[in-house]
Length: 639
Image 1 (cartoon, rainbow, N blue to C red):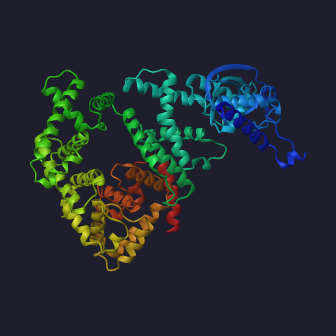
Image 2 (tube, one colour):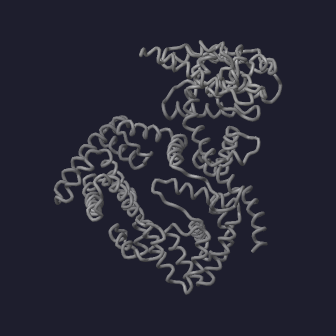
Image 3 (cartoon, one colour):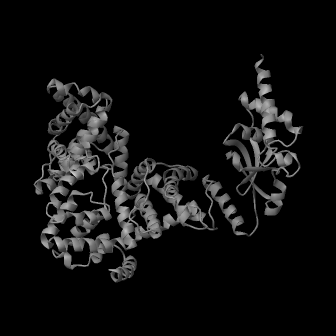
């Protein structure tokens, strides 16, 4: 059968099905009329919208096309045909769509947020039937000239759209768009001065929308913040968010950044709704990724130009994001001075190419001299040489700051050898012992590597507490304690969790009745930090069991009843969870940090009002202090 005839038959059937779907039983029996499309001229007259501006070519959502200039009686409100006068033309447009025939854009008239078809009614109808989301259109906007608030907003929106190309942002009140213009101007200045990008204002607006506005509004929507604001939409709330950023920055006398502000803003709203510790900022995988991007932008916008430029150069040269590392920048600067090079970029290139090649070659040469059981695992890693370089670089950085306190020069050969001995050999042993499947080896290796790095950072704290900082020793503890109730309550494999469990066991042995402590801990989300138990052991030793438990219970109750303190705790908790090491902070850990802060000023921490210490720890301003004092008086009455 002729293909053209098949498509023509398909078009006739499509028309029959689409036109029939608009005829309900009530319509067929004359009990109800099919609702027409809106008339452009009626709306134009009502809005007094006679001045027009050409918006050019736009991609317009089909659902926003709700009327017609001339053919509003030929289609119902869903663009379903109402009579067969249009049948032939409709079928032609259907065939053109099926054959992917090139057609000119439709022509639409716009009043406020609604579109009316001037040319292309049949194409819109077919697009509706085929389920298209949007269509390309030449748009002519007619501006309402009334004095009503919504008319003023639409005129302001139109001017903002012309200047920025961001036509989807609509406010609930007039006079708000200038605030966004100022934000985009600041962002454009940042692009020019720190990213060395000279772009048009529209391009800057596009980048600002993508990198700041969209991530922030996504997070606000995910946390259902609009529900807390009557008569305001998500764009209005974005301005409230900017106000909060200004207030926080003024309070701390520095730019606090977008990431801290959005977390604190959401937690402020949620805490005002409900004081419950669990009523908190929501996280998902998408938000975790947005946090990383916002954190990077914050650093770029806040850090000195020189540091931002050097980080950009390092990324351009190496393809590795060193995250503005002082250590890396210092290493390249030392290389530049020692080799009498004039600029940082040349130094970065030579440093990376020479050290990179030598380091990798040296690593492979030395690793291949190991026993065969270690050598055979090299094949899993040598194809990703950038990751090896980064791992050894991070290992060197940790030794540089943790062991040498940043005083000695880095000996790269020693770093490679020590990395092989301390990290590579031990993790390969774990891979062998755990019988890790080949496809999981690389992920397992770099996950365990992060645990080794964690232990290296905390080595001194553990040694002061007479604890081993060796990964294998800690894993042995995990295996021997598997029957312990505290370990079995969750799947423990992370060394930080194992250390916390071990310290918990040690701590509970000091009680005559540990159930009272467990009840308090359970009420306030448990303990996530090793150092919390260290502090509590010290406090328990000083106060005795009864006084310690009484103080713990009273202090936690006081703190948990003050909204400003609860909000700030929630913000610190989410910031902790946002870090790459997947750590957490419980309310009791937050309390322990306050106690540690208090002992800087007095050893008799039990004699000091916990709220006074907390306010000092949080560094709150006078306005917040007065608010907390008012809440404190209520809490004291309750106690």
